[in-house]
Image (tube, rainbow, N blue to C red; front, side):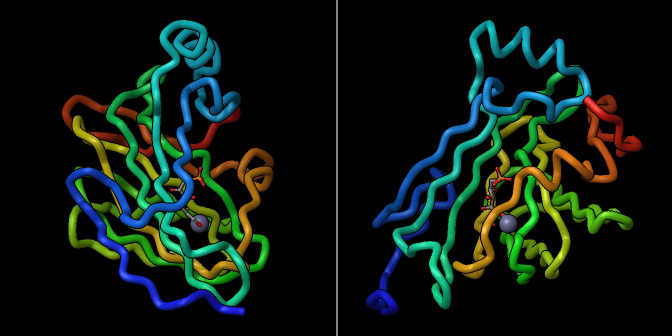
Length: 186
Ligand code: F6R
Ligand code: ZN
């Protein structure tokens, strides 16, 4: 059965949802094989193993017909010049998803196996992810990049798809800006 109506407070400056669901923390040690410079990632993971991003979920469960939300915060940084990013995934049951920028500067990288798109994100910008497009988020700034995600509870998350097909591009630091490079295997 559906859950009861909920009032959820979103603190955009902190990245918290109240009431809250599970909190996920991804460190460099969780991101093996995702950055082009795998030796650099491993060195840092074997060292102080920095947090790359956190995902704070709302209490709305990931089940059919519900519409869960989460707030992702990607900390600033780079590995071998490649900006901090999420693992990236495809929804096995292809359904749309929306992101809303809350803080910092980032980008939404989308790939459907053939085409690649890049949407610059900042507070107030909605990034729309159509069904069938794998997506990864990147912090292109020097402060935390934060966004709200809202997605169908039955969409599921396939991380293997991105490992197999890549994301079409990689995002590298380029002076005070960034550059989109062709995808290369790790
Ligand atoms: C949910 C969604 C986001 C991501 C989050 C972490 O469908 O797209 O909430 O799950 O930004 O990224 P991943 O899941 O790729 O590690
Ligand atoms: Zn998603």
